[in-house]
Image (spheres, rainbow, N blue to C red):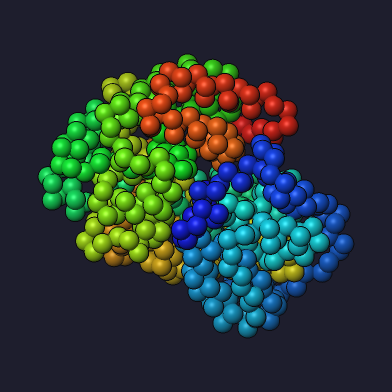
Length: 484
């Protein structure tokens, strides 16, 4: 998922991810319906009209053949991660190629670029993130996304003997595929989990729980101390799914979760892990372990309540350190924990973690300078700029080992630590990415009721299965499948 808006404005950012569902045809939103239709109007090589792209001489230092002096246009989503990291990389591009770079930082990628895709004049490189993003599945199907295989096979900036594909995390390669074509580069790497203040826990003598049972016991201690154990973005309860879905996969195993992603019949009701996890949340609600009023909070408000010490835990992604920076007190010690053990029958081991590529970059085939667009990405994939990203926005990139030896901010250091401890036991989910209207609107509504005690766990499971079955039967919804 792309980065969140840093603004306290309900009209923008990750919390409006539901809008994205229009691009997948799951709900009717007139504006976004227009965007999807226009963004994919025409397509493929037949619409390129033989436009000549600028070509430079390929060399060891210029493996993509970027033409000196050829202008570059970059469109960057300016949300919780900002866009300075991209501006910094553009400065190196300018210095190397003596070219002008037109930079646009925006939270409205789709609305601003849809007419340009329709007109055949998109920019050269796009950070396609945020609520109002372009539908990459449709763009890829229409042949409007550059095959980035040539970028993967280009020499890395740091070691000419190493190809780019050998310097980035394997899951980045997997997630960026449409069929057999790699045409999306997910630049960032998000760690999802339960976030807490290490200072608060140290001061109170609390330990981060390792199991679901320990979590319930720890919540009792926290509540006795006059602190709410949990808060969450009640106005956008799908934030809770960042943890809830992954916890199901941890206990029940990825094969069972893949069935859920694939909308298989009875995938929810036959998975015992679903019952374990949903009943756990039901228990937290019954024991009043959620901050009173959380159901009315935005993601910014819930994060602020958490950083001000009103609640001990919050479900979130690693963008939270940068997004909540202005309200986080000195010495807070932002930290994240791995998923909890459910019991001896867990299909995945202790320390398993949800960690996924995020922040999708694309290079349009109809841009004036696609080689330049790919070269900007090659520059961003250098250790210099991966480290700059980590410093500027307190987040990891897809470049493996880029932060080794760096002094990291508390939250990023904690995220890096749990990521290392997880080893190969990383969880990547697709349901929320493929069917956001289902997960964020329908299932999110159920989760909101569950956390206020207005819906029983058994009813959450039954209704969730029904909503998924409805989508599976809906021929107007494009379906996706995964095998692992």
